[in-house]
Structures are given as C-alpha cells and as structure tokens.
Amino acid sequence: SQQGEEDPQALSIQEGENATMNCSYKTSINNLQWYRQNSGRGLVHLILIRSNEREKHSGRLRVTLDTSKKSSSLLITASRAADTASYFCATDPFPSGTYKYIFGTGTRLKVLA
Amino acid sequence: AAGVIQSPRHLIKEKRETATLKCYPIPRHDTVYWYQQGPGQDPQFLISFYEKMQSDKGSIPDRFSAQQFSDYHSELNMSSLELGDSALYFCASSLDAGETQYFGPGTRLLVL
Image (cartoon, rainbow over all chains, first blue to last red; front, side, top):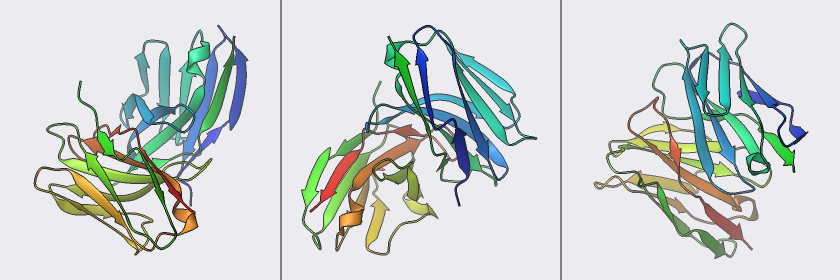
C-alpha cells in the first residue's frame, strides 16, 4: 500500500503567491525528503528533514514535520513560473537506515506567470 | 559537482528482448538504489545495494536482476521485456543508508 499521500494532487497558483503541499505517511520514519520533478525528468533533491526535527528552511522553501500526525508540509514562498513541477515526498521508514525510499503520489504544481 | 550518471538515457526494445541499464554513482557513494516510474506514477523502489551486496528489495519482477560492481557502478538487467516495463528507470546513490539519495537523470525505456 502507498506509504505517502500528498495533497492536493494538483495546485495552480499565480506567480508571487505561496504554495503549500502536504504529505501524510503511514509508518514511523527515520527521515523524510522532498523532491521536485520537472515533466518526466530527473528527481531533484530539495530538503531532508529528520524525525527529530520539526522545521527546516532552504531559500524559499520551508518544510515542517509533525511525527505525531505523520505528516509533513512543503511551503514555497513567492512562487515563480520556474517552480512549475511535480513535488514528491519520500520517506525512509524504520528501522533507521533502511535502503529504500517510499514515495508519495506527488503534487503537480503549476505557477502561472 | 559530479552527479549520478545513467546510461543509456533512452532505450527502445521489442517485447521479449533484453535490456541492460547502467548507473554510475556519485564518487565515494557506496549505496545505489533503483526505482521505476511508470507514466503518471510515483517512483517505485526496485532494489538497492550497499558495498556490492544487495541490501533491500522492493517490487522487482523476477525477470529483472541487478548487481553492484567493485567500482560501485550498478547494472539493472531486464529480460523477457513486456509492454508494461515501459517506464523511467532511476538510479540514486547515497553516502550511506538513511542519507540523502541523489537521483540520476533516468533511463527512459520504451518496449514496443
């Protein structure tokens, strides 16, 4: 069964607005990562957040993690047309240091110029 | 900075043929992962290797096999190809299990 589910499945916003995507997962995790994928191309790593962290920032990106709710959110501030892509969360499930990621279903973000 | 290299980038095969995909991890990365992403789907974990030994296995068909070589590059061998094998195949590498996985550009396989 799917470990991660993301919502919304699709999001369309105007340039300059903020975009928030959510990811929920089922099992305990060691860490959670967010990736971006442009239209059938490679997966680009954005942020890794470990299970003992609650929030991380990287440029215009902010990721939060709530392990009690088994959920994470990715906020992109001041969005740009170039942010148009699919965004996936991927979890590294317990036990710690497993050798695989389980990806969520992804959110397709479209930023309109 | 060096990234994960995959070859070929595109591959077209007929049903029942065999395909070999190659992955060259980032230097000093000893862990390699393979994922399959079907059209409009999320990436699905296939198999991983740590220090040349298989470390985990996901939803990899028995028709597929993989190995990691002494130079840490990995090959995914796919036999008796089926139409449903058409997908993007990603390789990722990391310094260790649980660390960030960096993905290659993928190999797009089309089975006709």
